[in-house]
Image (cartoon, rainbow, N blue to C red):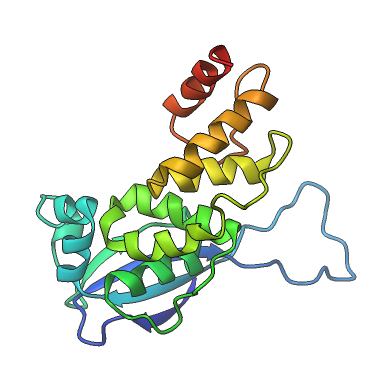
Length: 210
């Protein structure tokens, strides 16, 4: 497994480690025997960060680094290691780390919905809501009152429900669950997004009140 390192804080003491699956090489002319499969190849990306910034911004980090878990002890390279595997999108995570460390260069002024939903998943996991509130308010402005919501229960509507809930935009959230209630008959599909279990219940309640 190869890796690359990005210095979010050149004087950092913590490696945040993420893995991403590498695209398979072009198929060879010689066919593989039936039943053989190649193991996926992962590339690790290491972000050199400040534990102080992480713990100030993230409740999860604050608990983790004050615990007895291995992440709270320095490794052989003299750094703390926090490994997330391949759970999260690497680009979305890098944007969040830059914001947490006060490094605005490379932080998008406008965020597309796919990126917003990926960041919402990370923010909800790290519990770093306040640290990103200024940016998320700006990003969500584009999805406010004049934004035309989908006229069906699709992935776009599910993403809007996720990001408006995590980023605490009550207006967008209420509009979205009302729209979802209109187009949902039997349970709200989540499209594999980490939408909290109580949100479909709120949609059912909204349905009952219509």
